[in-house]
Length: 153
Length: 153
DNA sequence: AGTGAAACTCCTTGTTG
DNA sequence: CAACAAGGAGTTTCACT
Image (tube, rainbow over all chains, first blue to last red; front, top):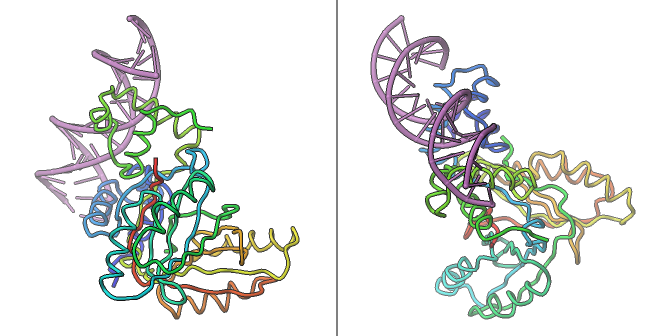
């Protein structure tokens, strides 16, 4: 599965935490040359280990202080119903993440809005209008205890 | 709340999608000078709009193919119980995110593991051993329909 | 705030061992 | 994989508007 050695993992680990590190700084920390770090990071991007580099914003500061996790259940599970839902739901900019799930509901959505009023508008005018929605159960974030994008390595 | 003008929002929007864009490229797109973009991005970081810049990895390629969302309910909700849980749960590297929630459970966890066996180990040896855990309900990701870190702007 | 220019650093490539 | 060199590119600062 993974043909990553210890150096690769350490590079990924550092870049997950802070992708603005220069090759020079990484080379210094790992006791390797800049050329080595350069070669390896290029390979890690080319081979898809690194999907992208993103600026992570503070939701409250940019006026998206209400994060909701919504459980969506569909009426049926035909291929058409599922793909139609998926194709439409990813178009909503409020939906940051959408996962098909095992268990008692079909999809889990992470929805970012300014406040409850905006969430209600999203729910009534967008989400609930999609075809074949059976139920939507929404849970809201009170406080962020831990918020990381880094996988354990 | 936000004293961000149109240029700031466009810069944030671009950097959310791809933080490896150079100031030159952003300057060209927004018809501004490189120095202007440089000043504004520095300010956006200093003032906390940009929390950090992160490499987003492919979970499957790095051997963390099983993502679970776990609903945790505690026995009581005294200040001590809550803070003890929070202080301990953030120490687990498998827990990428932890939110205190409104509604029928107390915390929502995003847990990244290699497979069901590793999740079971995490659950039995780590999560379930924390004090005052009442119930844990786990939901597993079948497929990633949308996976973004960008907020709507 | 925004700009152009200068100085500096880093990236990138190639060569060599 | 490391060391080195060299040109191009990007960043950073500053005086001026």
